[in-house]
Amino acid sequence: MAGTSTSHKSKKPVSIILPPNGENMNAISNALTSASVTDSARSKKQTSKAKAVPTRYFEEGTALNRILTESPYLARCSDNKTAALVRPREHAIRFPYMQINRREMVSWLIFDLDHANSLIWDDLGLPQPNLIVRNRVNGHSHLYYAISPVCTSEKARDKPIQYMKAVYSAFALLLKADPDYSSGPVAKTPGHPWWLTTELHDSVYELADLADYVDTQVSSWSKASRLEDLPESRHVILFEKLRYYAYSVVGQQREEGNFESFCRLLDTYAANINNFSRQGFQTGNLPSSSLRATVRSVSRWTWDKYRGTASACRGVMALDRLLPLKRRQSLAAARTHAVRQKATESKIRNACRLLHERGEQLRLISVAKEAGVTRQTVANYIHIFSEIATSLSVTDARHRPEIKAPERSEQGFTPEDPLVKTWSGSKCFHFGNQRGHHKNVKHAIHQITARNAAPTALLLEESQDHDSS
Image 1 (cartoon, rainbow, N blue to C red):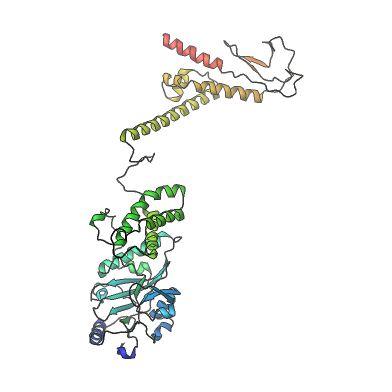
Image 2 (tube, helix red, strand yellow; image 1 turned 45 degrees about the vertical axis):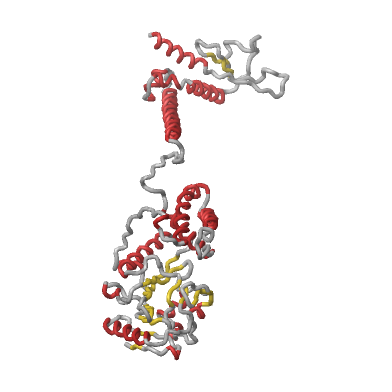
């Protein structure tokens, strides 16, 4: 094991290289402690740019080389946590803070420890991080775990993203790390002379390997916080207002729009409520980059996860809860009546069809028995019999062969005419073929008289007989 510590005057980065197996944890602890004590006695005035970059950044297969290759080509960087500059990654590694993960790809799980125990992972029996980047003054550190890249773009699968977040949350809880840090995107740059960097190994973890060490079960969602109970933070206020607005419009967007239109709505709403300067905030409005980041986070989670609370029962009609109770009850009752009426009508139509197929006469009692309803219920749907009679007459007319019509009487037909069919007890006549009635008219419209009067009359007579009895 080799440990090196150089003076700030030489401006050479400090790096402690340890064997991959991580043996002799006492030696690791002693090396970190001695380096921290030595550096704290030196001058605190340090340069933000280092002319010399650790050579291991350019040695293939090392953890530092993976930092370089997996970071964005144009990475955010700075000498403070804002990382307001954008530089090529070869230059970004010269700054004490830089963007480690790409915007839509997570290759490193980074944990922000706000305590001085950078070896807490060994105390808990957790796997070794690849890198430990430690603050020389207060001992706070960042732990770097290299993982197989997980895509987090809008078109990425949601399951791997949720799995990664569950693993990260479980590790952060055990390590006593900041749970809201979420791997950056800006972190302490490994190898920079501001920090004490310890490189343990260059292996890449699978999420399943890390999940074996922790419990990845996610607890149930907590209740919403009240805005008056939240600290006066512009980001918190923006997030709370934006997510409640997203909950109210996501259902409609799923039906009428898409994810892109949903994001545009949130963008517009976030821009409208970004008026903190008029609300008395001395820091003014949030920058557009913060708005975009918050919108991206809220839109993705709401679109994938939110389906309303379990206690809210909006019903199949999705009635507005602002409507008066009596109005909602009236609308619901009307819908229930319409559904039942449609079901009863379907039963009666089906019964009529079955009776007709068996060659039985359509009577109120027979139809009611076949449909499983009362005779009075069938009488309320008497229009069905008229429709059936009309459809049967049209069907018969289409399938009857054409025969030349004989000479007609003054009324235009004779009762003996085979093309004329009469119903018993009815004066309704049905003509199978009316061609040739008007020989001098080339184009004419002939009306086919429906033969619905006879069956309807039979049903009415039957109904009257039952009523009189």
